[in-house]
Length: 373
Image (cartoon, rainbow, N blue to C red; front, side):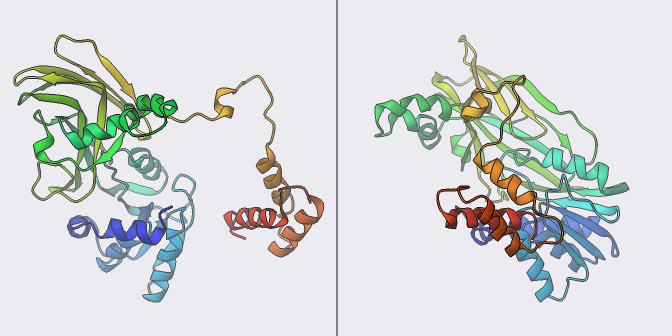
């Protein structure tokens, strides 16, 4: 599992990203502004806003990274101007409306880290009328791709040296959004923007595109390459486009075909693409010249649990072991008992909660930590 340090070091090391955000902040933020930094991580964007003259930052993140942001601001003597909030942005409640929102949940495809719904919710609940949003727009873009490295991603389960019982997972691989570094030489058609997503205005919950891609060279059509062009502020653009000289080093998206097919220069390949504002579902259809449509969707690669498969709305839900353990802990959180007292009482009253006392203690401490106790 990637640690917050490792994850955010890699994120902050992206060349050019900080400079683009700094230019957008300088253009947008007025000294004295209050800012909400959504999914703030270790707090770098908020720090840049403070250096630009913001009077106060509300940094919101539910991961351990928020603790690094908190201590960073304390060590820098900025904690009087920075409020670190360990919470989901959808649940966080600010003590005041802010002058601007800032966020860098710009995914490989732009929308696929959930930025649309995140900013939509924050704009409605946290932002003053007429307040600013950074970034302000995302244009997801696609092109046809012919690439051996991308091809290997799509066929990895069918051709890998695995037991044959796992070959069926090839269908999952071909209905998956793959993070992949795509080069201009891998593209086999001109690029087409599939949407223009305004983050500073209302938009739909479902985005859809239908069109054609004209093939530029004889090759094998493996699927779609996807990337973003993101307008941080007026005239300030950030992109991971394989065609851009000043691209930032963030991976692209590869959306495979069910079956690759040969194409010739001048052929027209039919394309449709849909995605949700939540960013969690993408559906794409590729129609070969004179062929039948191939329909793919990340829904088809969703891993379903037995609970998902057995769901019955008419059947009363029953707590599993973890649910019963969680309920036992919550029942004792009354503002009177200490964390140590709660742990001791649960262990005494529920000796068979988990196979070992050590595991029960770990679970109880994790639950109390989740509650901020």
